[in-house]
Amino acid sequence: MSQNLMSVSSLNTKIKSLLEATFMHTLVEGEVASVTYHTSGHLYFSIKDDKSAIKCVMWRSSVARMKFRIEKGMKIVVEGSVSVYTPRGEYQFQTVRIEPSGQGALALAYEQLKQRLKAKGYFAQEHKKVLPKMPKRIALVTAKESAALHDMLKIIQKRWALVEVSIVDTLVQGEMAAPQIAKALAYADSLGVDVVVVGRGGGSTEDLWAFNEEVVADALFAMQTPVVSAVGHEVDTLMSDYVADLRAPTPSAAMEMILPDCNEVLYILGEYQSKLQERVLSIVEQKSKSLLAVESHLNLLSPSRQLDEMYKESALLLKMLKDEMTRHRQRATLLCQPLFEAYQRAMAQVLKQKSYAVVKLEEEILRYNPQKESFKGWVQLSQKGRRVSLDDIEVEDTFTIEDSKQKIEAICLSYEKYK
Image 1 (cartoon, one colour):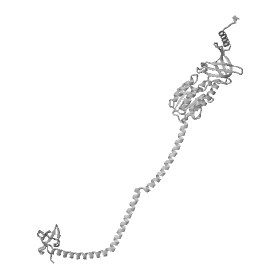
Image 2 (cartoon, one colour):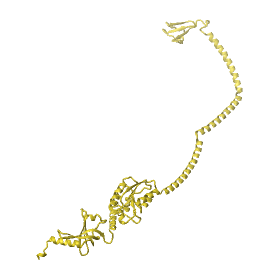
Image 3 (cartoon, helix red, strand yellow):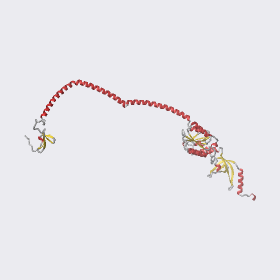
Image 4 (cartoon, helix red, strand yellow):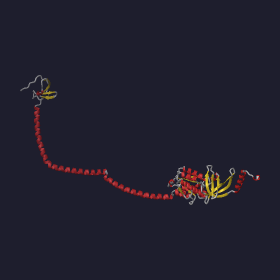
């Protein structure tokens, strides 16, 4: 009995060696019974069937390569090996790869991310920005030496060479592509362009997968500049197509969608020019007619014209007045001639009589002139330069007595009236 005696550690070690050597690179299918994504990055879960279950673990390095997340109730296929934790004598399935049962991992990851982003509102129409009809500056986020870039530049030169193009180089394939694309989008958003186009040419699902990564979707949703997703071919629909403001089936198609066609613009401008010329000529003709009508009306109402008319009318009236006055004068002359002659005869008689009266007055004046010697004893009395009579003088009044030869200042000493 002592020969078969083993310690617990020895037994667990032998079991470990036996199990790990026997169950290497094993595929196991089951339903996820429990799952825990640990903060360390490791994944702890268990799978089961209708009779039993087994614990599983996937280390952080393997978890980082997974494109989808497992959930409770999901049927999966795990690849790995059985390992034993000897201190507790417990075994578990050490997983290196997980695939969804019945469908590809990328397809499941795509659907999971699509539902998650949809729930966050990344696809909502109200978040879509309007692209300008004639962008002046655009940024192309793609691989610098790619055929997609060459095709886009070719279309730009053909359709609208006036646009200013900024090229933002980035990886578009591989594990490091997604974070680089996100960083390139953020940089393009800071350039102040009118539109950003992100894309690449066609390829397999794995080649295009970077545009299905959540980090790229986050960068697209955060952009302030309108962005166009132009990835792969028309049959390819990537997560970037849902989040972007516009989805183009190919990179070349993106340029045709966002840039005007210079030939079409020139044709439209030519049409506008013809219509404008016709409209201008029509307006000029209408305005010319209106101007002539206004000019004619102004001429009728012109002050100078009215003054001319008034002057002519006044001249005519003046001539008529002069003619009428001449006729009246002539008529009056004929009518008044006898009266005038009688008047002249009467006036001559009156003048003759008046002349005779004047002669008499002159003789009277000469007869009573104080300067004449023939009128002796005549004197004139005055007070304060005013001629007075003896009746005006009172006792003690001073007065002046003068004749034609002398003047005496006198005072009244007494006064007596004759009855």
